[in-house]
Length: 328
Image 1 (cartoon, rainbow, N blue to C red):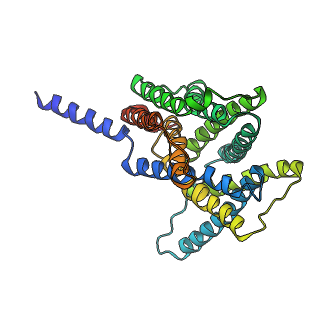
Image 2: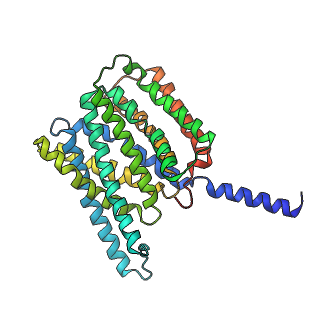
Image 3: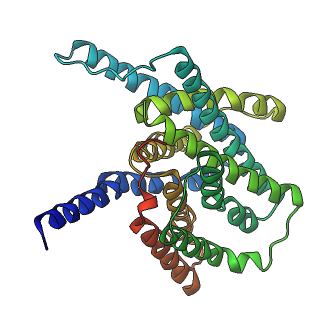
């Protein structure tokens, strides 16, 4: 092999390495998914005092206040630092307006996805709602292709289909006896589309803003977006016991700040399509937590389905499409 050929081969290998997902981003993503998987547990524990909409509202406003304090402390630290680092501001007013709309879209889509998901469970079976809600990877890839011309290789699609089949297998036993209403099924599908939408938005915001800032403004906008729903329900908004407050604070800190924060951080390196596939771990982890905390039964087929989901995510991770494009 000539020196020129060796140089070309090294360049190709380096390019493939740069395109592969960073290990820190992968770890952040999976730890973040572990964090958000506790949401169902916290919501179930808070059911005795609050409806799901009030629980979501408390999750968001507590997160907003906490993130505001964190960002304030960081701002003070930067002010007195010897080498302060500021985030680059958009270069012109058009970009500034675009980013404002992206922030509004992220917060609104996130709040709406949570509300539609919570409402769908009250209108149809949990099994049907879970399966339809977990169509998020399909909608994410479809929207990325339609809106941004993004393409996904065969290895990525193969891994996605394997992971989806594992999730469907987890819910198969419940689906056999599930009944529901069309509006509940439709709400679950809408929630999946909304999740796909905010994942794509975050992928673009991460090119300019830190994870903390995205999560802060997204949580603040999402809090405002949930207020009209609370006014319509006219039920209790805040917990009345220390246990109730403990559950919603845990939901905010574990699921929103740590969970969503690490997921947003990972999207600086990982594509929204791969993040959506990794979200399929959420029902797997939630089932395991229900088994450990509430002693809910898990069959052998459920364990096998868990392994299938992990296998699908592994295949998708090997694909070049798992890495974020340079200029999304």
